[in-house]
Image 1 (cartoon, helix red, strand yellow):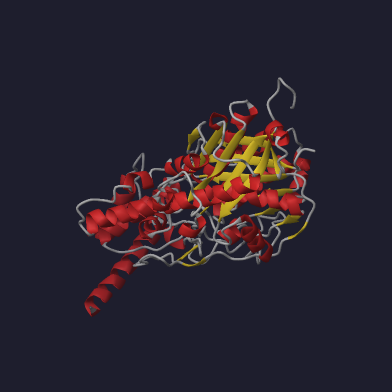
Image 2 (tube, chains in turn blue, purple):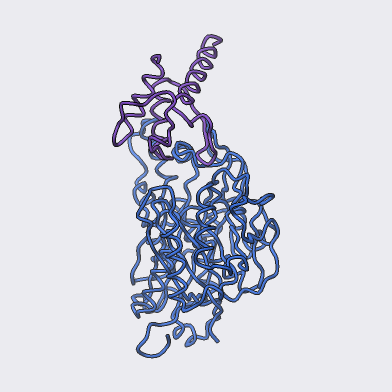
Length: 414
Length: 89
């Protein structure tokens, strides 16, 4: 793939996260190592008559402390919570990448930070103010806070990004799409660096009522692949990667964490909520083909694993279809069992889990897996993580509407 | 068929692309091609019509939603329950 004519190879040089089990990558990974459960009783807002009383909220996140070093973005401290998460995760990723910011050649950098729903905390406040408290006006920053592009804009402003800057939006596949698109821009020489991923913060009364009306959340917990599973649990957070062309990273002597080898995207084109087997299978197959890898090359698969009855069964069948006998050699786990379902941000957080798994040759567990569904019979790394040599890892995201995005990561090139 | 059953059948027909006239208490919901989102919308309509709440989880096989008759029975029980609560208040 290298050479003056061909597409550039793309490597990861920085990672950042904000999650319910840790607000930095080291904290998050330590949480994974401990098999920590980030799902707790909901608090921090009026619970009222909510029937679902659990969620995976981000704790101990002081945005003023985390974002105090923001130099160029003047209003980040006044942004919506979803933008704070993106800014904090991007800050961690950029620092790790060791890039000089603001970028001297800003037009050669992209910033693609998506969100499934944007600033819904702001929407909640805005509607309460207007309709309940009958306030004369909403806060002047209301609009900028809730639109789903603001997180990308804030991050871009802070680092002097002048190239392609926008948000992706594809529900639970938002982050994976952002990461894949950023990679494509680098591959085809549009930019040299891309800050990519997604962020989500939607846990409040109104949104919980909306989710309750779909009857897909579990009142008990998030138990992917378990016989007892009965729905997913909402979470919030952000996951951001810094991608660079191999050439750019080597030229500046950057430490490369991984290579982003492959990306596959498909759409089921069937149903708004019920996944099909063809779309996810083809997305995995396309990601492998793009990475020029065989199914047997994958060691760890971070599943979409939302713990709905239908996803886990469908995903298991899709994995079997793509991997054949090797499906039973794979370590497959759903870290959503620990950090909940952070909607659009999931793919970003899970990409980080894949890269850490490769770095440390240790696969994170699916916790809460006391007894597996007999139809889900793969090795889901139940309850405790373990040592495993991981050279290549795959991360699945399968969203509402049948929107599928799959990433494949490999070792940093020599 | 009583008023409750008739109203419920009307709601079912309202949410079907091709409403059938032969829906009875023994009709299976799966025969009516009612899937999870359709069910959520139907339940919402029933809750609104009768002033009740029908808790359920789409991830669980609900016996309450097997046949039209089972839905009617559940709704009648919930109406009776909420009526008793209102009488106590």
